[in-house]
Length: 256
Image 1 (cartoon, rainbow, N blue to C red):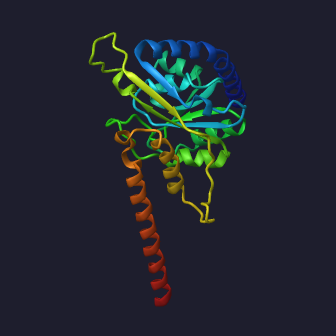
Image 2 (cartoon, rainbow, N blue to C red):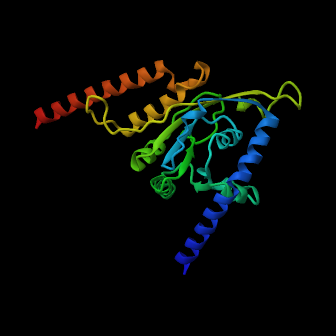
Image 3 (cartoon, helix red, strand yellow):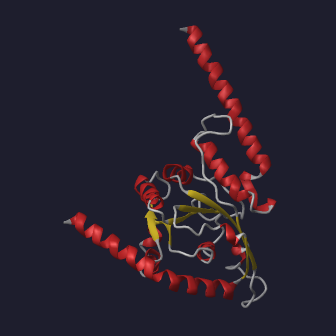
């Protein structure tokens, strides 16, 4: 009985989400226009065909999602912390526009699998790989779950870099000021388990590739730990760790 009830709830949620997309798009677009002066660059990079598409973006404020909503032409889904979705009315409205719960700070396999299934069915899914809003307006460490979802679903990934939304909630030029917001959309790509030389890549390396694509769309002051210099340092550190591990393995074999 519980299983049947869950299927009914999912079907109702899915239908309402599909029906409310246009309303949400109109409301979101209107609000974004009121609170900011937004410029979108690369809108043509959003795939038009109905295939699994995963949008990955940096996260500066609550206004990031409405800006992404304005980019797409079909309903999309996103993860939201379960505490937010439990908030009366606000959480309910978030669910209606496609949010589903994730338990932050844990390996929430249920949420990850749900996202993979959505993408395999041809849905559009938005994720902020950092997991939370950046408090210093720079890219922070990305979680490996985003790369795992992309790899497991074989979805197209569309990187998005957003700047300026952090100023919307703390306007310094008066109540009616409209801070400049720029949304840059990169070209779609897919993650591959191996590099151009056939070397198998770790999930951490795939996460770096994903976050690096987002960083390329941001000014240097926003790139944080995924600036070209930092990425080069991370790659070098991994290479050194691999060499140390190989040498350690050789020593163990000799001792045996």
